[in-house]
Image (cartoon, rainbow, N blue to C red; front, side, top):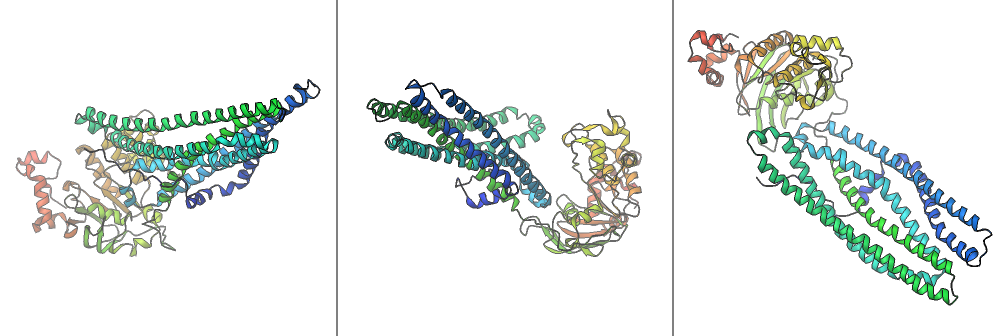
Length: 612
């Protein structure tokens, strides 16, 4: 098996004005706070520039001439500047962090709301781990650029300009001597930027591979253990992990080289100041205090340069994350409500397919010209080989997908004209693969519908015979359900799914998709008894491979290779000798070979039990 994963695209440019404009839209509601943060940052920068000048004043005006009057005041002003710098920096950081959190809260809510509107087809194409990364890691990267990026870069630039202006004002010749190392700094920074960008891309790609591998193998750990693949998968993960480690080490080397390089260049600048400024001071051209102030300004000059280089990485990450997030937000809504959708407090439950053609991809047709009509209250079963198109019919009724040709109608209205939530409110859907959420048993039956009382939850559980095992759990209906119902058996989860459907009381429509396929015979008998009651006067569609579970329905539709080939009652279809008869005898040929008494002791589905 090759190490191939779906990887995120890495943004080519470090800055994209279009993406930045979209990102700033989420900051715009808090622009007053941003302006306040910028003012605080300017004041912080000014406060940081006061210190070296006060040192010059203290040395030249008080220490060198041995005039101590006023020195205490200079010291107090210096300390006040430090305290002000601390307070202003704290306030600015708090304001921007709050703005970042609020903006990311808004973006995360918009993204999740958009995900809820996307069709089922979208989720078949996208790995779950990738979508989770969008809402978590990628949004966190955007938070960094808001809180530490744009505004902080502005502050760094103000500090650099301020230091250069003060140095030129104090002594332009000494300023030129100090800034002679600036071309070298620009060169090293440009090289670091390229190396950092390449290293960042390499790390992101390898991290995406690790996330994809972990998501797949943690979910499939039981299969890994069952087939004894622990050592093999360990070696594959070791390869991915070592690759990620190597990419990180390359990035660390870039950082490890950059900071000492800037520090060394800063030391060269200080040496130039000491050599040139010292001579000038000895010659009486400049004061000793001025030389000391220049040394401090030179040291502070290189801090923003290092900071700007690091901000480049933050900007790179933010641009890549924003591109992926906005690409997801721009994902078209394939199944959307029309203007003025149909809404109804109740429906009769008439379902009709008119010459329906449907494919998940291109023209690889799953359904080919399917037409049938189900009357209100009628109980209908869909049977056929795996892949015949039975579940696709359910997906079209619930409008998880839209047809390419033809029409699907509920109560004579095309489902594309219905409000999706209103349509699905009338549908009780129980699937073969039951999904349970973390929470309690009661929460999973109620699913957030406040109108369903605790008593109704219990009645629904008793109705489908789920209460027998629920009452034995610690906490009963308040027993904790772990992720995906890991502590419950398949049969127990399906009973909860039945209780969920009944508690929501779909008014006229109940759709079942292989819902009893993993339930033992005794439990199935109890469920079938409950289903006969709940399906009374309800339009019911049942999909089942086990034909013993559908012999009581009003009509059976046989789907073969995407087409409706037969329909009728169980008895009529057996007498016809077509595809249904073949399915029936293939399923029960073992029972046909047994004595009648032994067949009767089975699941009740043999030829001797073929009544409609």
